[in-house]
Length: 102
Image (cartoon, rainbow, N blue to C red; front, side):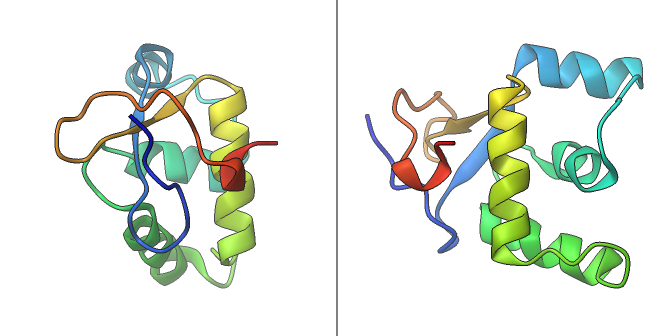
């Protein structure tokens, strides 16, 4: 299955087992924007909404512009800490849209 992963509010990401372990163990050696996004990713909330939360929370420190959020998503995907999921089933999506490929 392929879900279009664009910053239009439709892309949904969940933590991988490694991402969940990083959060639970509390040993997140990530830059603050990555750490914050990883903590917010839950497998249910669309990425555009997460970007709004990040922006409202810390806009003065590190604005959550679409390009910053896209870079953060790419970094977390590359580290294997998140994966795109189908919001209806919570199943991992086998193909990530080119919009999120490095």
